[in-house]
Amino acid sequence: MTLKAISPQEAQQLIARGATLVDIRSEDEHARAHIAGSRNMPLSRLETVQGSPAVIWHCKSGMRTGANAAALADTSACEAYLLDGGLDGWRAAGLPVIEDARAPMEIMRQVQIAAGTLVLAGVVLAMLVSPGFLALSAFVGGGLVFAGATGWCGMARLLTLMPWNRSRG
Figure 1: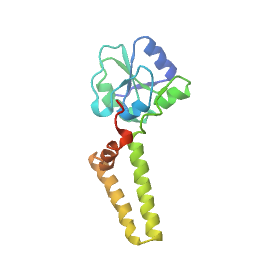
Figure 2: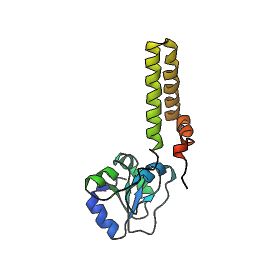
Figure 3: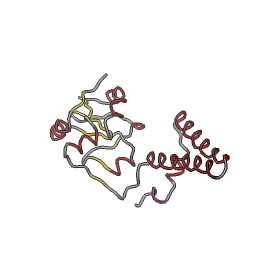
Figure 4: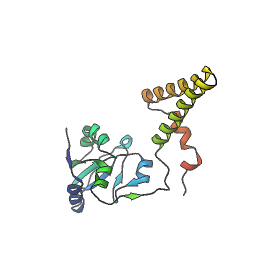
């Protein structure tokens, strides 16, 4: 089933009439920036949305909701829509977004930065010091392939243990 994409303004009108806005991004993404009143329900923990005249699903850009529209439709016990452009579209429409710059950067962005830095360091060190440093780049590349194939990322697990990612409460 394909869900209809609605504009941020249409979503705002539906919310005013009691629709539920659901953010399917991860908890860390939601903590960093979200639409006031949105309910956080990461894709990995979808459950049926009940007791609402309509549900509006959103992510950051609209790509995740679009790619998972069938699963989102299946968990909607009422009329269901996708927020066109996601959080970015909401922000571009000039609508308010709650942001917490103190919240840690999203784990997957941290993984991308760390992996990219390690691969780049391995290549540079291999060129300047010893070809053996290519093993560092190969190790990180293998880890990324493993994470993509299995859904388990050791680097993400390690990064969640870092002091800047620990709960402040």
